[in-house]
Amino acid sequence: MRGMNKVILIGNLGKEPDVRRPKEGSVVAHLWLATTEYFRTRDGNRSEHTEWHNVVLWNRWAEIAEKYLHKGSTVLVEGRIRSREFTDKNNNQQRAYEIVATSLMMLDRRGNGTPPDAQESAADIVEEADDLPF
Image (tube, rainbow, N blue to C red; front, side, top):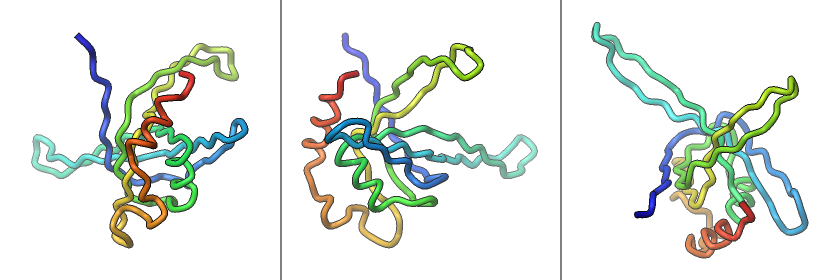
């Protein structure tokens, strides 16, 4: 039996996309995405909880994020959860979780969710992301 690792998030960017070009021909963007759920407490008061997600976009999706996304942008992201371990500046072992995006849709009211030059097939972009060395 094969497992499934799929995440779908709708939220708002907490800051501008962080876009880098780590090696010739590749582009990576990191988004800080907030998802907020609203609920009623036992005493009937309305409350909310915001969760922050580190989203990683590669190549064409990263270029789209760089060109069209800004702090406050509303997006729908599909992808998979990935964890990685690292040593922090105090030499402590840490684990970070991030969402590696395979799909991105802009939900801001300004447009229809897809910019004109981003009409590329989602399947083509997903294939690019699956070719990554990790």
